[in-house]
Image (cartoon, rainbow, N blue to C red; front, side, top):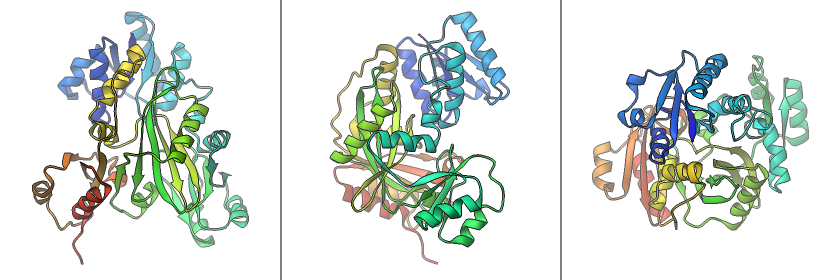
Length: 387
């Protein structure tokens, strides 16, 4: 099997996907802009060959790279990146080289929030009222129908980039002082708890692994208000969440892919927010593993190579991500934290700057049998000095 991996070095932990593919005798062919000499040794070992391009956003360069690999290795069986930014590029390459997987004619279903709303409703899941919007007049008409507050965000966007909340006309008008360079969607703001349904499907669309996470607040609030984020996995998945998640996975026809589906839980309803057909961001892949004492990097490689999920899991732990930002002054030093929680914190590392607005400049992963224990640890880690 020949698999092209776009930007295999980023994010840093994703080299493990290549490493596990290599162990399954998959021919892993990398394409990126980065210098090969800068790759970690494990990634170099995992790649059968690496083709460096000058500009990953120059599609002609990617076509030449894939043509080169096809000439030397034969038909390409898969193209992957597990990265939101490259989803359309993956789809175009699959279309042009007739490669298995999501192609250009359906990629909008998993990249455009306006398309997602339609499919959520087909899956029987409620959504926030929303529509595409181009002018402030369009937005005010929406507000006339549904009221404030509202949220405006790119129809095709990643995380909370260029996302705003408006509570009244002056805030709404300020958002429209500059013309939008991309399509935007306006939505009624939903007050509720943010949670996710995450997992992995096999080649037949069967869910072979799933879990759920609860977030301290939405990513928009984390970024725009410079908050610290804390989120944790559940050991028992709520019945309504699992039902909605399974219906969405089926409706979106997710095959041989990770998924990360976001919801708001209000006082009386579960509301679908968006779908991401890729692993969740940050260190969540590693949280999957620590929460279950398994290796999801390997299990994805097993699905790709053999269409087999070769392990079992029982969610023995709640696992939490606890972020800290360099813009804040904290009460407790890293050394104090590690001395106090050395038996509970299973991983920590600096976070690359591109992810820092959402998840902080430094992240801890902790696991425990109860949510309260993780919540107490989070409070200690994120406690800031007064004044």
